[in-house]
Length: 86
Image (cartoon, rainbow, N blue to C red; front, side, top):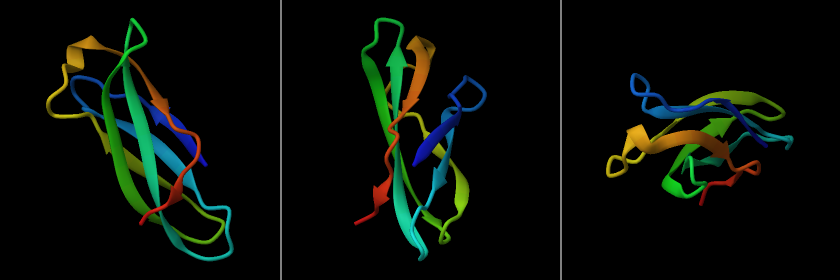
């Protein structure tokens, strides 16, 4: 499970998310965030792999894309499901 903690800003070009591991063993998960403009179009997509202990929660920063316009950002949407990283 992924929960958005904070969206990207000019000073912090990344979204902050919490990733929860529902299993009984440590695993590495991929957290994904869509960075969305005010017209609801996704202007950037970011993902980060993070190891999370069994039944634990970790906070991670998901970077805003380098090729996207941060000034066009309206809000962030964390994809709610984190899947084990390949």
